[in-house]
Amino acid sequence: MYPKPLTDRITVLGNHYLQTYLVSGDDMSILIEPGISATANQVVRQMRSARIDPFAIDRLFLTHAHGDHITGAPILKRAMPQLVVTTAPKTARLLEKEKVRQVFIRDDHDTGVRLKQLGATAESPAPDLNESLGGLIKAEVAPGETMDLGGVSVVVFDAPGHCIGGVALWVPEEKVLFCSDYLGFFLPPDQFVPNFYVDLNDYLTTFDTLAKLNADWICPGHCGVYTGEARRRFIDQSLAEIEWVRHHVAEGLTGPDAGDGLRESLFDRYFVREATMFSEHSTRYCMDLIIRRIMDTTSKRAGASSSGRAGGVHADE
Image (cartoon, rainbow, N blue to C red):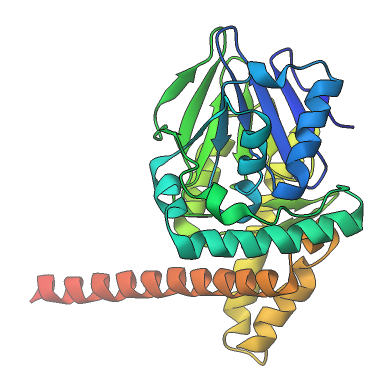
């Protein structure tokens, strides 16, 4: 299936588990999403097989600071030294932190080993990522800015809620949305993992903003691209899963599944199919984050309600 043309300007590279996108303009070409170290050379080979000149690509854009969207960048940079690795300012700041890079390296190893077991790549994780991750970013593009590639443009959208500093990319001329993980993690044909790891309300705002673009193509970081009726199902099923998990957690917090039992119930539901590309440890941590973010939202609502009542009493007095 890979590489495959999406439009005259856009090519999908990588594999089912981790996708990389090439947007070709008249004046500049960019790669979006680097994958991980074990899949990056796969992208380079695919470009050559499609007679795409790797040395004619100008930039590599990183959408957000999670290891599976970062650690392929040093390998792509080695293969294509001319690449200017670009991201949003908050992601650049996170990559300056040693502790953050160490988490990415651990996740890169675990995911790379697993993808090799699944047959998605023949390569092993790179052993020397820490030094090459430091100082990786050479340019920053902030939300609200537009990259003019010549004949086609890429608009940067703020996309909070999933990860600190996340951004989505929109190509208005092609009506293509590179949504990374911001519309959920799809497990075809009918399951989603809701992934509001930073803030649920921000995640819902991002979801609404991106859905209203009415893209012809939805291009996540994982598990396929979607158009037509499949695009509509993608949005509807993901929203339905968000509502399901909110209700499930709210019920579980007052029932016998509170605590570890609630986390394990989510783990059993979501650690299936393509989601097994990640480690069990990482997945359980993410389940804890989902529960915590729902609790945060519930607490904020309760606090706002109490403030409103207190304000009303004060006004009456």
